[in-house]
Image (cartoon, rainbow, N blue to C red; front, side, top):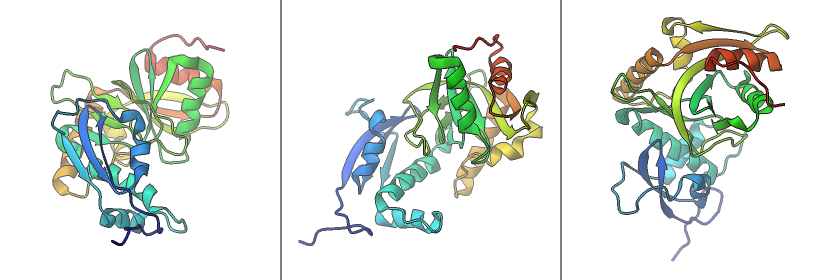
Length: 265
């Protein structure tokens, strides 16, 4: 029998496993072991005999589709591209389950989560790193790049941010969750000119939409926009212009938490 290989000439080692992400039980059948390794922190968190909320079946076609939209000039392995295909497959199904994928960094402090959003390269990772530097171990990075957010149907229930294995180049993630207490849109400021202010949803919805994954299916995309409307109506929104200073941490910390700033160092 001919051994099956991927586009890189590597032998395929089909794997099946179960994870819990954003409170959902998800069964994944993958062609490469890399997906399972990526999801290691999320394995074994649910009863093996329970029914799955979602089943993800990978194929070479799904992997090739990711290659077609990947950054030109790079040679991405099939194993890596499959991790993206799994994420896309899950993200496409989240809206009908009151969840969505966002591009942002989530930190947790005193049991509450704060979501920092900005285009890549603006400084999200730098700012949350400074929170860790000046506020110490009380700050936990739930996810540094692609968290999931659940928006409960009941209007009196707070949205919840969840860690996922897809955590960007830094790999900052925890299998953790916390109620979302603030959403911050980050921009750069001149040195010594950091500032933060509360903003209304109408003033920033276009910027927030750009940091939310919209499925290709029109119904799922519509559900995502409905979830987003509910999210920004329940969670305070802030605009933060910041430099790379401790003062930027101080003003964002005090505005978001309502607590006096007391550095750990």
